[in-house]
Image (cartoon, rainbow, N blue to C red; front, top):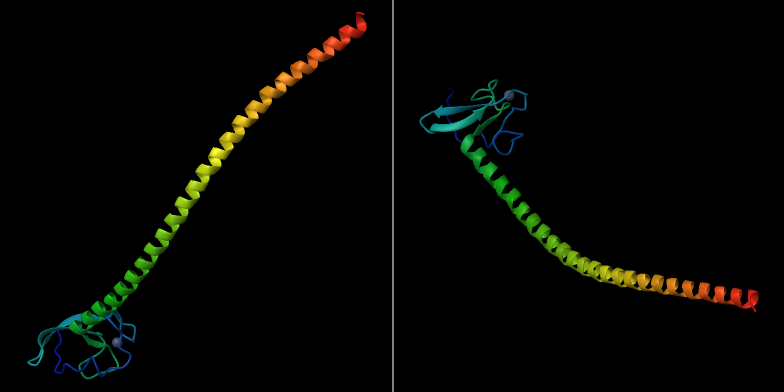
Length: 148
Ligand SMILES: [Zn+2]
């Protein structure tokens, strides 16, 4: 455990990381400690194991300040996600409207295809009748010329 005398150590250091720090600028993993000073008793902080109270080149950051930054960043992210969600909902509604339009057009096209199928069946039966009539005429002409 380490002790710290001042609450302003974390604000006057350079290259501060937002949120809960994981590594110091030197590459070392930071660890969490509890302050045992009179001014900050029991206050949590993150510190580079290579650093010390006076060495400001290594990371030192109060954990409560880190948590506040994490919450602020999360809130910003949450706001962006809310905006994105409302845009997605609007585009989904537009897609649903277009889908309904396409569905009604598909139903109209299916009706037209079924009407065409009915007409085709009717034409085929009429053609069969015409073919039979034509064959009848041919037979009658053949009989007329061969059996006078
Ligand atoms: Zn360090």
